Image (tube, rainbow, N blue to C red; front, side, top):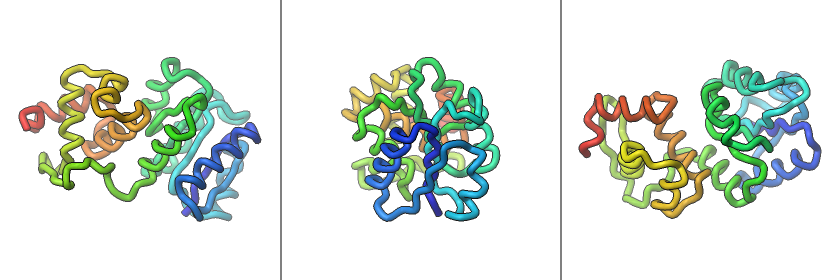
Length: 202
């Protein structure tokens, strides 16, 4: 298994590799300048554990890189890390398959926290003793139940972050895990699932 950092700017690529090694010391990290190098890199380094993808690469215009990676590796977490403001492209990236969108301007601590959560072998720590509630063959942690309630209240990521005392990037990872657990792709689908399965009254 290897973590693939796909970034065409050498200095930014070096910085991302440094952050990845901070998150997962000793992990195999493959550095690519463009997606056309991916097949050869996988042959050399093994299957992907995580992709860290720059949005604008020489050989992948617009969102084609996101779509390509998710089409080939649907179960591998994909973090898009871009200089483009999240307000401009985050929703489109999520629709294309990205699991999380991070701005390059974010602090190193926030980026490493988000990557660490994506790489975690188990759901994020809830601080609640790990109790879970079954629903439609799905087990939700208390934190995930709490998130559903917050979504039902119409809270934004910023509001959720403030209420829970965590960063917005960590909120995004919590939501990513919730979406993945429920098999949905959006807040609207999450609330529909919750209403259909009685999760709003827990």
